[in-house]
Amino acid sequence: MDDIKTYKISSIVTFCDLIWWLSLINNIEIGNKEVTAMDMLKVGKGENVTVTNVDGDLIINEGATINSAEGQSITVSGKIIINTSAIINGNVKCNSLRSSGKGTIIIHGSLVADCSIEIKDGSLEVEGDLNAPRIKVDNGLSVLGKVTSSRISIGGTAEFHNDVEIDEISVGGKIYATLSFVASTISVGGSAHFDGSVKARKVSVGGTLDIAGTSEIDRISVGGTVRVFKGTYGVISVGGTLEIDGAANIEKVSVGGTAHILGYLKLDYADVGGKLIAENGLEFVSLDVGGNIEIFGNASGKSIEVGGKLIVEGTLSLSGNLDVGSHVDVSKGLLCDGIIEVGSKIIVGELLRAAEVSAGSEIRARIIEAGRVSIGKNGIIEGLVRANKVTIESKGHAGVIYADSVLIEEKTRIDTIYAHKVHLERGVVVSGKIYYVDTINIEKGVQLSEDPIKVEKLPDFEEIMREYLK
Image (cartoon, rainbow, N blue to C red):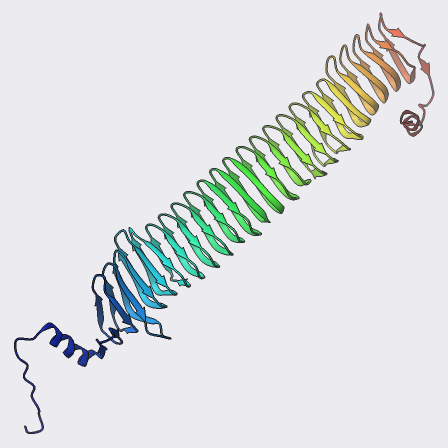
């Protein structure tokens, strides 16, 4: 028993005595408030404590400040639990971080959580990197460093000032990112602004989406306005306005309002309720536009359907059909392998070529080549026409026609006709010559400047064209 020493402690122990004894047991240096190893550490309201390792949970009350030792990180094997607000100076690694209350958690360093981070009713600001499988912040999140996570949920505003790589992110308010942003799905209730590139499978935004960097996105769905830079996109669905600035490849766009394309665009399908404007040419498969289309530069595709006007400052080439409710104005050539149907006017600066051409009131081009050409009542055809069949409804006017079959309805004025078969209804006036090969039918009241000339073979069209274009 002599080897056993017994220490008797008075039953009355002051708080300072208790802290001194705990410091001996748990290796805490109280003088400079440095905590090195604890099963659990509680930091009181407003306290300022230096912490290195906590072998358990770290509980921080409102307004406390936690500092890392010089050259070391703060490592917590358990949870960090924060009441309302706190400031942590240094890099932090923990199992998880939880907070509650309408305050802000500020980390002057990086934050790594093995499991999750949850900020209830408050905000989180991280000056370094942020890494956790699951992050949930009810109010706002701001990160200056890189972000890596599987799932992020933000109730208010999210700001990212470095590269972001996540699986899913949901933001109730706004999102702002300055560098590259990689995610599977991005869901934002308000607006989203990306200064850098975006790579994502799906982006859904309730308000405005603005992307300034080159991006690769499979699907975009936005209620308001979309402004994107050059890149590759799958399907873009916009309730309001779409603006594309830079060369881009897009599979399909669906726009409720206006689509404004500033760079060269290669597009498969477009469905636009309002207006489509392309400032630097357009390559497409199919365009369906309720309002007007304006293309500055050459355009090529399969088919176009427009409720209003189609204006092309260049050449338009189509492998399919063109259907326009109002009128067409193409400064150079209009080359269409299918059928052109226009409610009002067709005005082409150079060659108009199609399988069939019909317009309500006017067709103008230097040369008009088609299998069939027809113009409505009181209509005008201006240009040299070469076709299999030409039909001009009553009270119209046409220039030189070269065709297999020509039907000129009553009270129409014609310059010159070269055809195999000719039918002139009553009241037709021919100011030039008529050359025909097979038959000619002339109704009463037709006025001819000369008798029709029957020939075995029509003159070569190339010779007529050279003479016409002089």
